[in-house]
Image (tube, rainbow, N blue to C red; front, side):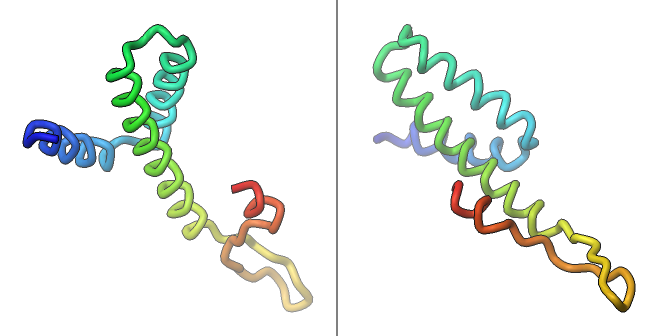
Length: 95
């Protein structure tokens, strides 16, 4: 791959970091629809697939960051306390 592809990947990574979760999901849905239609040339399909994988990773990372920030309020005998959010085993198994 040439310098142009490397430059475009670096700028795409920088752009992706500034994209919101909702924007990334919307773009990912658009990419999936294009790929499922089968009406894109092979080279374009490969580029879309790569972009989709990067967006998928970005969304996963953003969700992990949010999970770390979420705290659950737990009521116990001593009153209400804060407890870090941890996904249930069923949620973790679905990943």
